[in-house]
Length: 114
Length: 112
Image (cartoon, rainbow over all chains, first blue to last red; front, top):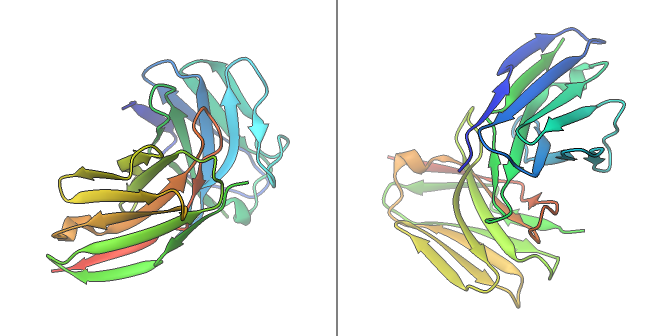
C-alpha cells in the first residue's frame, strides 16, 4: 500500500479566506483523487487529478471553488477558496494503483470555517 | 451512474457474535467491490475486497460474498471484538481510474 501524507492535518479558518491542502505520495501514481467527508457522512468525490491535465470535477464542484494542481506524479494540492462555514469538513486525498484498482487514502485534513 | 445502497446504518452486536453488512449496486459493469473500515478520526482503511469473477473471499474473521445476478455483496465479521467497532463503507466501481461510489456507511458497535 501507499504512504500518503497530507498537510495541514487540521486548520481553523475565517470565512472568505482560502486554504491549500497538500497531498504527497511515496511513489509515482497516475491518478490522485480528492474527497470531502462531512461529519458522520460518507465520502464524496470532488475531483480526479491526472498529472499534466486539467482536473475532472464531479457534479456540484467547480474549479473556481476547488482549484487543483498536479505538478508531478507524487504530489497534488486542493485549494478551498472563499470559504464559508458550509465548507467545514474533512478533505481526503487518495491514490489508485492500476495493478490493483484499489484506492488508498491520506490521513485527511480537518477544516473548520468560522 | 452507479448507485450503492448500504444497510443497516447502525449495528450493535455482543462481543463474540457475528455482524453482517449488506450492499446493493446498480451498475452491472461494476467489477470491483472493496470494503473500508474507518475508525473515529482516522482515514478509511481497506480491509477486504472482491472482484466480480469471485463469489466469496475470506481473510481470518472477515469474509465478503458477491452475488452478481442480484447485484449485492455483503461483509461478514465473525467472533466480533471491541476493536471491530468502527464505520464500515462498501464501494463499487469499474476499475481503471473510474469513479468509486461509496455506500453511506454502517456504524458497528461491539459491546464487551
